Image (cartoon, rainbow, N blue to C red; front, side):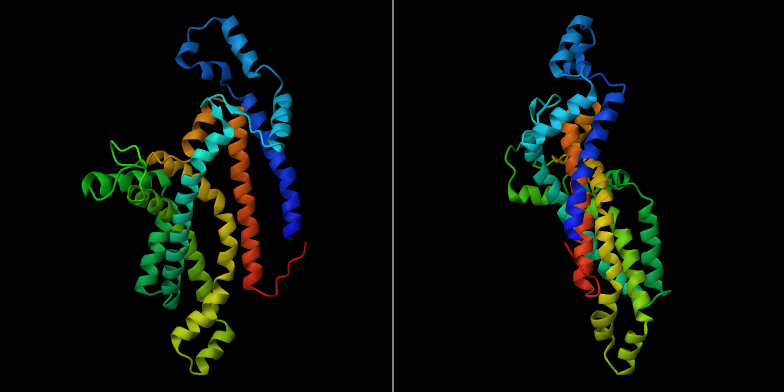
Length: 318
């Protein structure tokens, strides 16, 4: 199964990049004017035509896509017209910070969601269960950028407890571990909270259903302690559906990260993505889309592998 998924990823990535070039070509943005910036507003048409020719923007998008694809297969992702840098350098300078943010947020969401879900499942219908599920449903409807703005207002402006954004303190040019640790708290917490409701609700439902199954009732009848029944029997069975959630939450995690990075001026790939989209930067836009698509495919594969490890009845081939 893993082998088939990896083989299927190749045409999927090729089709996604083709779609990116097709959509960008159909957009109303003019790459030449976007590249020239404010100078392009009063530029003569012949100057814009020459610039468009230099950028290759007057060629059919299928030709541009094929040239980019064949070059990418050799490791050359092209040059970003918007940022005036090689695409590989643009991604290399930013991807680490995005991975750090998403990794911390995802770990927090899974850990907190599991703990809260288990505690809520122990006494379904109780006061704690009703409070946790009510907050979870409310957070499901809260956009990440709204949570980010609220966190900045409360923890940065009102309380002055945490930095409002960026990677370093004002006036500092070096990102020390201490500065990074303090600056990542708010964006990571906001991104984690935006992903938390699904894990809480899935764990609560899974563990709650497992507590009503015959094997768990039998364990209780044998006189086992409630903690042993909960952690040794119900939790493992109840967490199986959550493993499939890991892969399905990757697209939402990426989307949420882009919004959170923008709110907190986090130097990840969000600013590069926005720049590539608004300026019709074909090479950068295609590379970032491939990166996001690959992350989604890896997330789905990871959830399948985890499910197979947790449930021996699921087999793997290929």
